[in-house]
Length: 441
Image 1 (cartoon, rainbow, N blue to C red):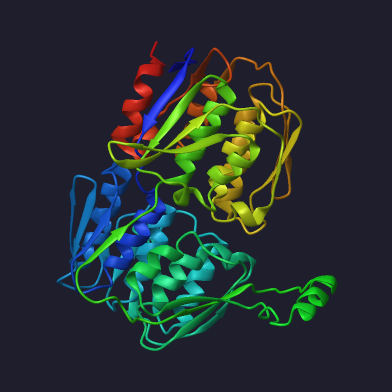
Image 2: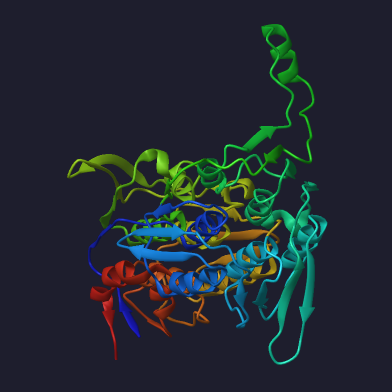
């Protein structure tokens, strides 16, 4: 499949929620006894497969337009014994299954260290999990989780925060989670579901006296292993709920990076406000030079991204810990910068995230770009000339998204093995956006 760079890159999109956030909100809705509406979402093939698996617990899940309707009026053990290829679906379904004795779910091919730590945490909560091999490997829940815990995150469990909070929200009593970070991109979802959710800083409160505050600033900086403590109980918001999810920051960041690397045109993001990009990779792209202006379209908020002079920047891992997939977007934007960009994803990445980061580096390097891998990120040098490239995405949706962004911005044309993973994960809206750019041979 050949992708041709347009002379002008003028794109308009109304991004919906990312898949992982949608999956988490859907999982949280299944722990309630009343109707929950989740929006905005898109009925992608990936989401439809997840709905089929999650419906095995007796709930009715429907998609109407860009709204998910969850009716968990019947709570039965989850019975889904097919092999699971989706890593995030497996982790969320495992937590849900652990809340109901008798559940049986299929296994993912490779249960990495992060997933193993989640299993151990569920056992600490009282779950009895029996794993069976053979032709149809699965896990059976002999006993459901039934006791709150105090949990201290470590390197191998740092990416389990949403699943741990999901499990804790199903328990009687209060659980605590000592987190390595100040916040999580998923906090706002739990705040909409639970009155029994709070995140507290472990830092000492600021002194009221001005002199003491000045002396504190001059003293040696406080070193804290755990920056926050999350307190969770199953005190749920009563009644029917309407959950609004934030737009897909990773998708938007790659489209923005494509615009910056292309050098001509604009990107219009409908139904987005400046508050929606706070703490996202798009905020980092703004630091690198992206011009992002707020406007309104038909009375609704919107953002317009236009080309600007890109500057090389250093991005700390704290800023991308929750968005490891966006490291490729910032690297792509850095190819047009004057100088060098150092982009650190996270020293707490899972094995899958690290493999994806390496694949993204190789993809960008195929254009003749000077890019080097470092322990927890990448270093890219800005340049003006790029080589023709033939890209292999390995059927990875994020690599396919990076290939799309690079293909419409760097070289005049590029050969890509397949963009099918884009439709799988982001659906018809993104497919309609890129179809005019494709030339199939």
